[in-house]
Image (tube, rainbow, N blue to C red; front, side):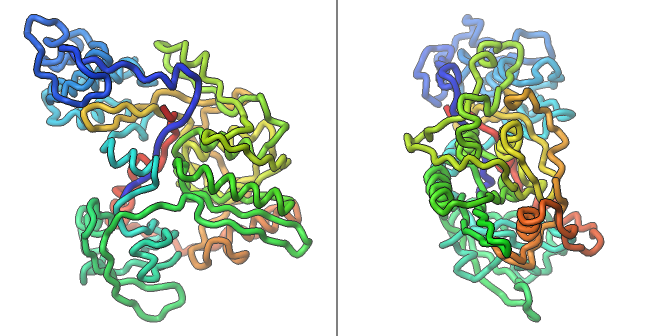
Length: 481
């Protein structure tokens, strides 16, 4: 099952696709192996030698090294690409290229891990399918390790998990007849997150309120993600109208349902908006800008939503990357303007990247009241670079808002702390985070603290399984090319 994450729209310089020219010439979009390199050609020699030994050879030009699909050719491109665009390119520590069997492993070894826990690689086809169409292989659930139990946070409609009536809060007790804690990390991941259709997994589960476990059979298939999972209008006891929106992924297919939902809220005359981003790791930055533009409305028009800051090799990108609040969506639709003076955002450690951009971008114009947990802390972003079938995501920029504020590497602490409440469905006024938002909307203060959870239990097997599932795409801020 895919782990979502991806890209955005900005100035013309960012929308320009760099010509990908291999050393023997060739097609800018080609991923074919270049076999015309000659040892007399210094560029080809760089490719054949890996081009990055230990500082003794010259790092090449990524445009010229692109799409030379041999092991040494791809590694040469990786080193050149990072040297060109990586935000911390000056701090890269050289490693022997021969120690790494794949370009992806070499890429990972070169990252500045002290500052970068987000850069990653993946299949170009798989990533594009998700971020452009919401298509993924899997069972259609999202899981969390909550105090030693593996539990469902939400289920995608029309998925294998939905067909078996898995719901928010369902606990996974066993996999294929074995207690989950007895299984290795790799076994858990293979069974819970299959990467191809037709994989069968038997799960022993216990639903909220149930006394007994039940056994269900899931068969993986291609499913379509619903990034706007639900929306509703809640009338409080003081007759305030709250628009409630569960938004899980900044992918292309989110644009129209987000606009439609905001239009419904505007027509209904809502007094407050509660946008639930507790499971939203980000995605396309242009989606975040549109969401913020609809919330803030006219007061922010023409002002900066996010100013991107690239490394010192690309001052032209920094100069031209002022992403402004807008009245029109990327798809051409006019954006409804809510013109709110405040907004409630439900957050957790999974609220990341483009979701944090919404919080940071709105804060100069709108009172942002966060309820839940501290966000993940990722003020950085990517531009997807494809080479030989692999999509590379190296952190290329940081972002600041209209007031020049950014750098929130420790995340945004909540205005009102509240634990995630898996005992109640999303959208229920009894669900702890939403209940706190409703209380704040009526009283102007935080309600009771979040639900008390039992003491944390150390279950490294479950933790590793979830960490393996939570690939980097769930935590992403991407410029759409």
